[in-house]
Image (cartoon, one colour):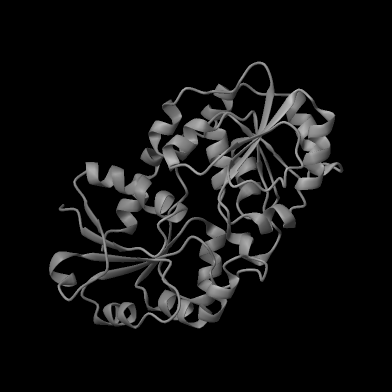
Amino acid sequence: MTAPRVLVWLTDNAGPKHYRFDVPVEVLQARGWQVDYGVPGPDLAERYDVLIGQRLHGPQPDWEQICADGKVLCIYEIDDDLTRLPPDHFSYPYFEPQVDGTVAALRAGHRVTVPNQAFADRMLELAPDTDIRILPICLPDEVYTYPLSQPSDRLVVGWGGSWAAQHDWDGAALLDPLVGWMTQHPEAEFHTMGADYTNNRVARLRVTGMQPPLPFYQGIDFHIGLAPLADVPFNSTKQHTKALYYAARGAAPICSPVGAYPQFIAATGIGLLSTSFAGGWAEALDILATTRRQPDDIRDSVRDYAISQHIHQWEQAWTP
């Protein structure tokens, strides 16, 4: 069977592109798939069998017309619920006025791809009877081959992510307990990668700026990784991304009990939820600091999340 020809219409070139396209597309192309990026033109149906609209938002008359014409399979790909951003989110003023158009674009698609079951359930609320396919968050296989880099002379607690997470640090009330815990533990260092939300309050702080995905993964040297999420409807469909890439680099995650994190912790048997103890973040840090698992064991617990273990799901979802 000849692999379908796929055109991806992107609206976000950052993290969503990496996890939802770069990671699986590299494998698919090695298997003979044609996957291109661009905006559909008048010769779309002659050149492609599938059009994927990534995070299309607001009025999308061209997309809706292509879907109505039915000449190619139109897949609406979404990994954040753009219909219910919290007002304190930096992008709320941009996306909130466009919700009606976003929902119309979602409903126009022939198929919808999302990262987890909670997200699928939410999309079905907005577009009943839609053909929903779950494509889980995965990592490149090579991430599991990088040498682990946890130092032996100190405990490294860390966080890694973008400049879009202030509302999660605030909503999860992470900073104050982290400041207190670091003050009481001179053997520990805090390593923040990407953005820095510590406001220069955390002792023994090390900052690594934004990096491309693969150097970012290689630079994770944490023993313990923090994954805060605000408990708001927007985050109820969030995936387990941070906990996964921490664990794949040998770090035990402490996560907010929000989104896919509880299921991830239960399924893998690694890490803790921040609300599992009366002392919250600080008590969870105490527990993981004194009962450390070997980084190799932690990484082995999440090998099933390598893209090679799930690429068949992309092949099925992207085939007409």
